[in-house]
Structures are given as C-alpha cells and as structure tokens.
Amino acid sequence: MKSFKILSPLLFALIFTSLNISINAQNSESLVSPFKGSSTLGTHEARFSRLTLLVGPLDGKNPTTLEVEGALVSTIYERPDNVTPFEIFKSYEKILKEADFDILLACEEGKCNSKKNVKAIYG
Image 1 (cartoon, rainbow, N blue to C red):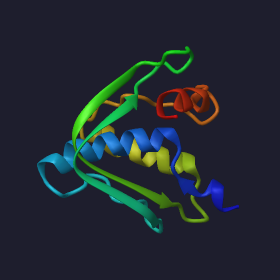
Image 2: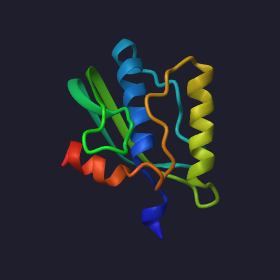
Image 3: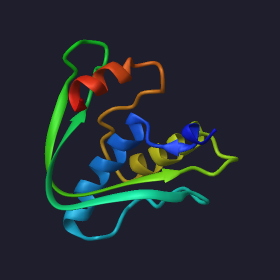
Image 4: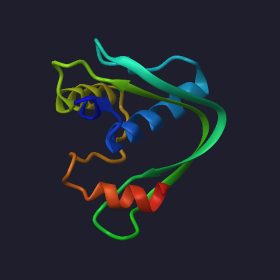
C-alpha cells in the first residue's frame, strides 16, 4: 500500500525541515542525502520563510512549539519497498547525532498522540 511507503511522518518532517533551514541558509548543500533507493515525490523551496515546529511534549492540548525563520527546503520521499520506516529513522538519527545536531523531537509513530497535536498546530 503506497500510503505506508511515503516518508512524511511528523518526525521526519520536523527533523529534515529544521535541518534544511539551518544548512540551506548557509549553502545549498544538504547534510543528509535521501535514503538509498528512495524516490522524490515533491519539493518545496522558499528563500525566506517562517516555520512552526513541534518540539514536545505531545501529550497536552498545547504542545510546545518553536518558530524558526530562514531559507527553507522541504522534500518528501517515497521509501524503497524493502526498507522499514524505523530503519530510515535510526539511520537519519545517527547521522544527525554524529553531526552534533540537537534533536528537538523524537517520537515513534503512535506513541505521542501526534495526529491530534499536528492538527491543532498546522490545521
């Protein structure tokens, strides 16, 4: 089923959007490449934009957010058939930690009540 293959869960969007804001504001290179075998479904770029990020905790009615401004590049990928979302998550998490990024929010799907909070923040 195609909907389960799209890499657009809240966590990935948060990590990579915030990553690309900081990276692409300085230069047009990305620290993290798409997972091998992934295909690009769509990309959005803005020279200057404001973005609201959920930073947790996600268990209340008013989750903590952080607003960031800058250049924005957001890309949605479809994962390869033989790769699980968890494998991709752990791979990207490792790369970000090795590059000394602060993880603002890490949440396994279905464990953080994220759908309700995403709707409250993003509509």
